Length: 242
Image (cartoon, rainbow, N blue to C red; front, side, top):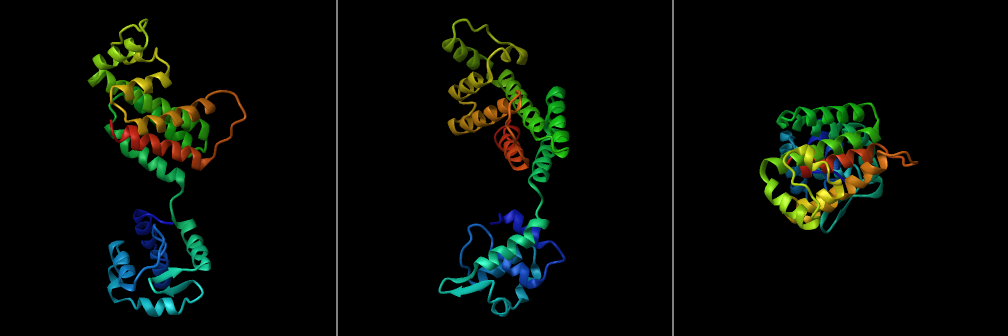
């Protein structure tokens, strides 16, 4: 249910009881039965230093409807999982908050003024809940980053592969020249010259498909989670790498 970072974030909330903090430790992915000392270790690692003195078994025994003790250790019941979900829902940052934070983290490392402008517009769109616009602007910013990477380090290899695929290709010298190629074909060339791995290329193709759906008149509806996942994919596979 929770990643290690989310566990740390949730346990830092001062309004939680000791019992609820222990229950939340049982919700760390992968959710499974855990021994008392494993729960204690997780709590301490997540910043709860006082957990070294907590009476964990006693706390779980008093929450018998929320946890069950098996041969493998303590684990959450269905009621326990619902209880933890109820607690964590209001505490954990929303998908948009995480996406915005990720983009802001990478903005200072982007020197291209045009690229930075696209990403700032994507940030504004996310915060205003304009999810289609956020998807389009973040994609354009990612492609701009890839254009700059090709011009900087892979131009000869790119032109050679592009010419192999289309003898009419006019040798590119600038990022604007690269924009003459359709973005789907651009991704294929990047994979062929090993700028992108196949799996990364496949993920970016999905982002491009979503961008196309959001950038043209149609009945497609997207929500916060879809937009945030799109942005997260671009952060992990483009902004954080190039």
